[in-house]
Image (cartoon, rainbow, N blue to C red; front, top):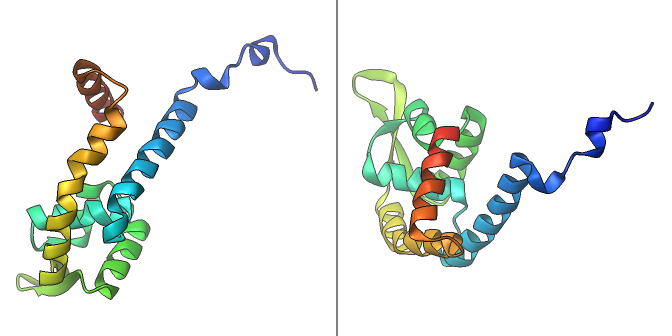
Amino acid sequence: MTASPAAFDYQLDAQIGFRLRCAHQRASGIFQDHMAPFALTPTQFSALVRLWRHPDLAQNQLGRMTAMDPATLQGVLSRLKERQLIAPRIDQNDRRRRLWRLSDKGRALIERALAAGPKVSAETLKPLSQAESETLIGLLERLG
């Protein structure tokens, strides 16, 4: 089987998926450098931030607010609960539903970790001008 002429013009470096993956790897490394003292993954950090801002979220609400699928979120919640950073409680309006909130330990941790958040973003966006950074964030919001 021979490749089509268009296949020979394919440039990996010009593909959005490849570029996003490269940018994600860079951003993840920067995140890990800054968040190492807190032992938080990006998904755990996202969940804790959302719970810090919005106490008593149902799991499906939290999943939507963090852009996590149910299976991923279930693992994140399990690990955060195991570390005693979050605690469930029964929803008084629907006793079948659990609501999640930060524990005192979780609140203390995320309040310290939040200080690193802007540093992660600033370092990640450092190669760009302020206008380019704002444009990139806006474009990524539209894509995601």
